[in-house]
Image (cartoon, rainbow, N blue to C red):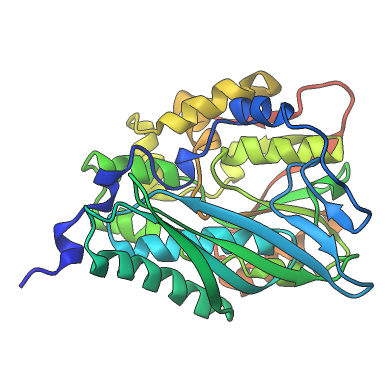
Length: 354
């Protein structure tokens, strides 16, 4: 007998999925600009100023609390996989700050009259399984009856106050290293249109359910100056946040970027998400593309769900940092560019050789 998981396509209940349903960077900036100045105690080491992945609050001389939340609508139809992906994506913010997660709270919104309890249960099971892999409990949460399925985590972690990796820490001359391949948004769009084959789906799941736990070890290195994870704003959008926070400019080489091969093929065929265009319209005026084909621009702006860590490290340490990535199972991690001093040029120059 067919089970409930096989009868229901989760993506049919949502207008967008994964990190592709994030509010566009330009609109988000406009919204946040209206916020009044908040309380900023000296213990708040990182708040909203540098667009970092999480807030950081100093508890004592040895410990800082890292707090974040992330949730979204289904990026895949399988409820267990959806839960795993959403949890990995949320925990990534802790790793991107160089921290170690300690616990999570589940955030759940489900259309109760449309999804049976066993399907919702599988989503929760998937998220809990990823938290077990990270070695932390799901210690509680909150749930509501919502129009569209929503799942994610509020996550907390710890790091030494002097080892937190902020967007503001990068330096001119730093090497840029990307830990996971690009193309998740393209694969998601292909899945929704029935163009994604089994191999492409497996590649998508493998990338999105790989925890960015290498961030814990990277956080201990003095030669790693800054980290972020690449999610809904695409590689260019999150690199821009790092450049702004650190007052640097960046040069990317497209041919150096790791890309999921199925996504490369589909992007050449014109497959893309609506979020990719929204991303470009938000920040394209701050990027100089040299010799880039349209499909290459798509991959540079492609929203990544549970994407890879983007690391700025001392140039002389790039080889060792790459070796650490590879040893930890991020087999396609690559050096993709360099940071430069800000002398009034475009924040990012992306060089592509068609």
